[in-house]
Amino acid sequence: MRFRSRIGVGLVASALFVFAAGAEAKALMVAAPPKPGALAGQSDIVVLGKVVEVEKDAVEATAYKGAPKGEKVTYKIAVVKIEEAIIGGKGLTQFRVGFPEGAAVDGRPPTPPNPGVAGVAIRIRPGGGRGLAPVALTAGTEGVFFLSQHHDGDFYILAYNGMAAPLSKKDENFKKELEAVKKVAKTIDDPVSALKAKELDERYAAAMLILQRYNQSRTGGTAREAIPAEENKLLVALMMELPWQAKFDKPRTGSDPVPPSRSQLWYMINPNEQGFKQPVIKPAKPGEPQPDYNKILEDATTAFLKDNAEKIKIKRFVK
Image 1 (spheres, rainbow, N blue to C red):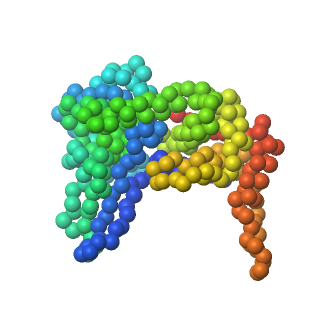
Image 2: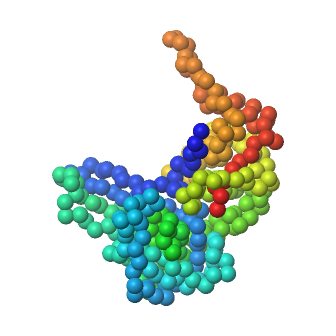
Image 3: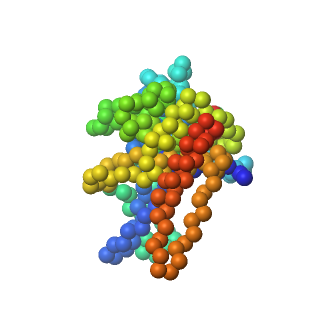
């Protein structure tokens, strides 16, 4: 069976479009990329630095992996001098970062002359223009850059398909956001220590980040390898410790994190290739109570973990 990544939990998602009804017309709202801490978890490289120049000569490269060779995009190249390598980039002094020629500095997409749908207009989500379309870089821009290797060009691009604008040093919350980014970097650099944190919430957050990265192919390749043994053991132990469903002990607002649960991590270990068989749940007969699906999965996954703790071998995409 061909392996399929389960990273549909929200870190590597395409731009989200939401229709909202209006009095006179409908509007299309374009979602911004995740917050800096979450972006750091997705990025190949994260550096604190400054754009020292934009190269005079543009380059051409395909816009996406598998695109016809004749369909190329013109990229301008910004040179980012590194002040501090946060994730990756150790020992380097600069990165070449490409952005499509004609991109806007604030990442706001131009309003099309003919949207193609009567009565539909583009509306930018309230809160600014951080990464709503491919972002241009200009000399003097200083802050945290979230980067991904371009699939065939000799340069990097901004993360989130070029839409993740740098975290500017001028931002009001720069220091706070930088702390969140560095916390993510610490987990990536030392996953074992993160998975041994005293608090369950911290161990769970570390596991979520680690498994998301391990399920993300950064080169477009399909080769995978077993993760280090100690990480594997700690992740399995955490799975056994967690309840299947999140337990809500108090009212939760939309901004509160979801409490830890096994169900949020389960499919990121790709249980089918570990030998787990999804339980067959028969529908209730007329007049009988419906099966408790969550209880059935709780029991099935608990039994599987107890019987196979030493056999489970979690894999990650090869870097």
